[in-house]
Image (cartoon, rainbow, N blue to C red; front, side, top):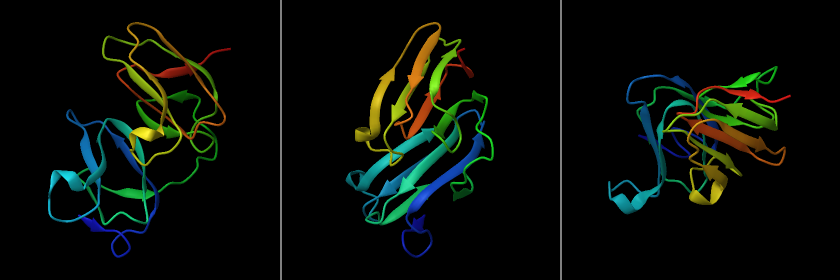
Length: 152
C-alpha cells in the first residue's frame, strides 16, 4: 500500500510484462478503511500495464511488483503484445490485426486512470480482430487476441 503524496506521487506509471498464470492486481483508493466503496478503479493485469495515479487518490495498492514513471520508447513497437500501451510513447496509431480467439478483448482508451469513462471503444471479437487506433487515442489495451501487427 502506497500513500499518494508520501510514498508515490501522482502521475503515469507502468509495470513490466506480467506473464504469471494469474497476472497481478492494482487498485486506486479513496480511503484506507478497506471498504469496497473506496476502490476508485482497479485492474487485473495480463501483459504490460499503465495507470495514472490521480492527485485526489488517497492510496495505490498493487501486487504487480515494481511500478515506474512511464518512459516513452526510443522507437515505437513494431507489433503490439498483450497489455496496455500508450499511443506515441509505446505504439503508433494505425490499423492493426490480430489472430484473435474466443477470449479476445480490446479497448481504445482516452486515459489510463482505470475509469470506465476512459473507454472510447471496445470489442470481444471471435476469430480475427481488426482495429483502427487513432492518433487522438491515449492508449490501447488488449488481452487474449494474440500479437497485433500493423496492416499495410
